[in-house]
Length: 165
Image (cartoon, rainbow, N blue to C red; front, side, top):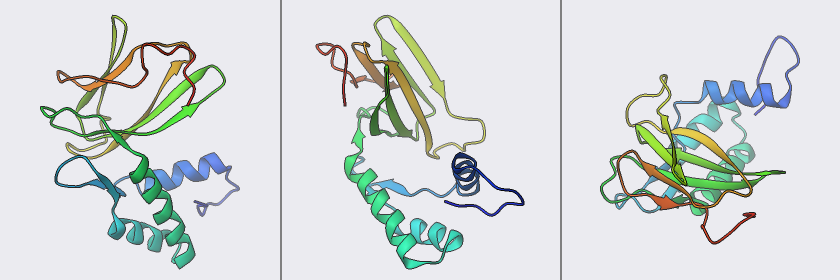
């Protein structure tokens, strides 16, 4: 994801620039049932070709998104309007991070009696994908996610403490 610049860039700066440039490219799609994810080959070739026309580069990002699609856990309920996919669970020193892609207007995380509501970013159009990472302390129990007002799905089993992924 190295980006051209008039000064040296850190890896993080280069990734940020790449993501901003290609933020409207949707590399994942869901089949008509709304259950199975797959990579959007056309968009990956378009983005990969614009950024770096090398076939090896395009094959690498395609394989990466195929992995994401195969490992996405779809948690939207039947009455939901948008899609919520848990793409990855990350273990940090004292936290667990859930990397989520969604087309919902608003999603809610429930931890005990606390509800945290996250709304679509202002620069994201209705129906577009937006991405977040929700971090919770490693000792969290009973973390749930749902589209606002819909059925909830558990991300951390309440029987487990010190959740490892």
